[in-house]
Image (cartoon, rainbow, N blue to C red; front, side):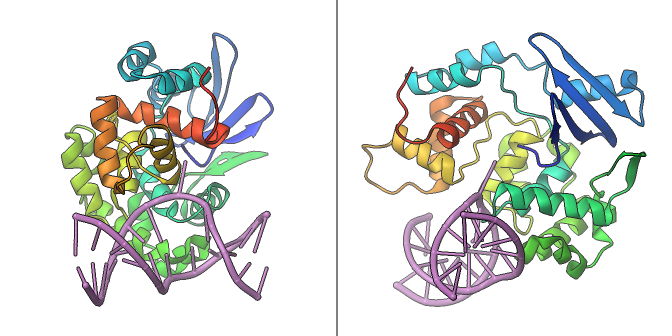
Length: 269
DNA sequence: TTCCAGGTCCGGC
DNA sequence: GCCGGACCTGGA
């Protein structure tokens, strides 16, 4: 659920804490290189980013309340939810509305190319995601040139707000879910779905439950097929939080993945 | 060419 | 509160 990683054979290259990080894993080991900072310095940052410390088995036992979710867990066992940079995550998901993954990736990369700082050198150089201050300084039209369309004013306004410290994104990590959700949805272009993405993928709120079209289908087809009444997205989120519990966000990602990859009619295994 | 894609906002019941 | 339409853009 992040948009700047590139695959190169066994290796994946991304930008983490202003470093170009190349990473790969085999059965039991994760290997990485970083530029410009030394691996010793980056290691703890990367460990946090990858959420290595999260106890998956405990989460599986907590959310594994029915055959459907248990089946999804069996297929994607080991899949973790990243702890991304909240600012980059916020802008990325503002870009995601009524869009698609290739375009969102292109938008985010264009924003970095236009307004970020160079890192690395030689054959491999990339750009950082621009800070709130850097993005607050550019005009809405220039942001629109990145292909984001009608989302440009949302991004410009959000950049100014965050640059002014309203909200202070890092502080939201320490704040309860409901309060952080309220703060985020005050921002222009940030509704219930985008806010829940930011909460889940960057603010360490594992009960967050973003309801997009895929989750909407999955829940409707697999869990509420006998319910005729129309459920709003927000009510679906509340239902899921109640049903799956405090790690509902993990259930969300396993179901999301399953519904996208396997479709509606897959059988339980 | 027309349609649609990982929503949000706005105006009218 | 719920419902429908508009909104940039690019690929099918």
